[in-house]
Amino acid sequence: MSRKMSSSGRRRASRRRSAPRATRPQVLTLAALLVVASLVAGFLALSGTDGSGTPAAAARKKPTTAPKASPTPEWDGRTKVLGDGSTSYTGPQKGQLKAVPLKPGEKPPQFVVFSWDGALEGSDHLFSHYRELAEQYNAHMTFFLTGIYLLPKSKKALYHGPMHSPGDAAIDYATDDHIRTTVEQLGKAYEDGNEIGTHFNGHFCGAKGGGDWSVKE
Image (cartoon, rainbow, N blue to C red; front, side):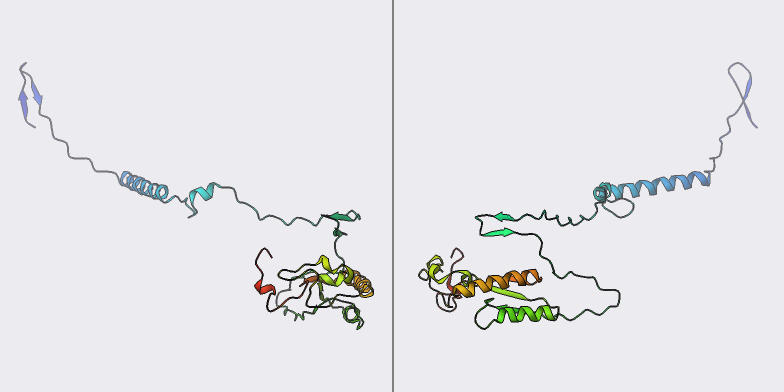
């Protein structure tokens, strides 16, 4: 090893250049992991997702459960008059069919729909005839009632169809006796669980019929 003379006359050892230290493998691995983590964090921040692939905003929200159907309120047994008193609520209808889910592999049943046009208990007694058939065979039917079938002929001027004179109708008015028997059959049909639907009042078709009426009419 060479020595140099100092200003004081003493010799000093010359500084040896040290070789570069070898980098440890653990340090390289740690650095690589830090780079990868930084890249992943930046990607998630830009894309707005969390690690599960769910949008970050949605991930922060609490999971919501499906709303449950409100139970049918119990009827207190009192008749409640609605509006002007022409209608009233008399409690839930009894005897209605209830939907039953099919069992796995169960074949869907066949449904036959019965509906009748013009629910009038006239001299032919068809209303009561079909209602009794429904009761006999445990069937349910829909009876479509024309409004003027409950309006006495002496009061027909109370009905005024669009584009027609008061009291005009394309079908006949029921007699007072037929109105009474029709009301009786309506009550029985309802108690049996049958459906009562609404029908054209004046039954106007063709010229000046429903197709020619405006929305207001």
